[in-house]
Length: 286
Image 1 (cartoon, one colour):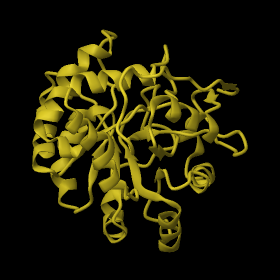
Image 2 (cartoon, rainbow, N blue to C red):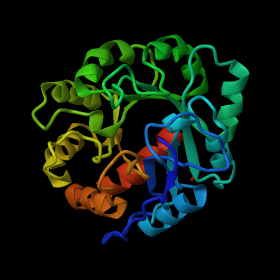
Image 3 (cartoon, rainbow, N blue to C red):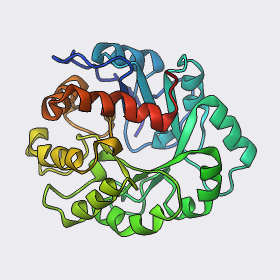
Image 4 (cartoon, one colour):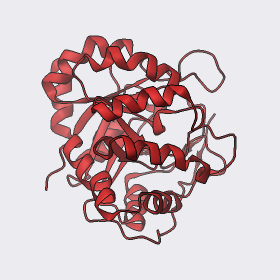
């Protein structure tokens, strides 16, 4: 697919967020940087557009995750980090062929994690385009430990529950994308994942908009949110997934942030999840 589309805006949340609040899962797309083949039209989600959405939401910080159309080319991500004023961190992709010097340069630039994907492609054939699978994490783990980096994993709950016992032994912080992708609140695999959250061996991003729910609406996912907070709020992050590629209709980041704050209810818990947890995990300065 070719062409570009406008980046989605966000409504202003009803709730104020604490200073230093962080969106732990976002993306930037910049037409100045070439991209590979893409299954979707690229949004004009430049750093300026990204900053405008953060300002609307009241968020100071954000984590930028490498989008699939850029593949292994870090140029767009590194440019955004360099212009982010210390308020941004990055999640890149790489396999075991990546030189140590490159990883060290990325660390200085603000990258703090690599992402590994087991989700199937939209057409159902093979892994998602432009991604690197979890097998690479096993070989990269010693180098991630040396850098103090994390591994972000996008997989179904069934896949994650199967992999977590072995991955937890690698000694690398494990962060599961998109609520760990359970097949509804009663998915038995989600219960197994909650066990790792309780033990502190897995983090989960409370990002609602890609979780399967049969089209019943985001409010039906509250049991997942409640279960995560009951398990271990010290291992929960909040993320919007802006600019919501391949999602129709586009979610509203302001409305999702309000849902999170309504459901959380406790300002101390909101402070922990929005500020303290990402600051500790990604090394944001005080």
